[in-house]
Image (cartoon, rainbow, N blue to C red):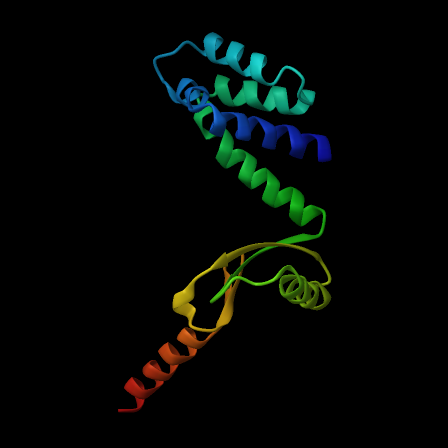
Length: 156
């Protein structure tokens, strides 16, 4: 499975680096054989599963959706491998040591390996927001102020 994840990701990266490839795959007026030839040229060294998947997407008229398929495959593969992807948003840039400490706490509580994408949003004022799938934990000062405002409005 690691080879499939890598090769599918490599194809998506190639599609992002060469926008013409994505345009070619999305163009409904181009013949499927031309699209398949392009896929074969770009992914000739890919795992056979990846090459066949790309060919199947082209055959079914879904060649322009490779990135979405790859994202979903990556999500499923990560879940199968016990990995957890989180979005960590803080009010200021965390040091690597601070980020590692937060990730270690999440790993300890979840029992899974965590891959954290870090972003900065100064409007949080302080604290952090942690997004895991559809679940969101808002431990920011802005979030607390907004909650206080909602509580006050419901009491008045």
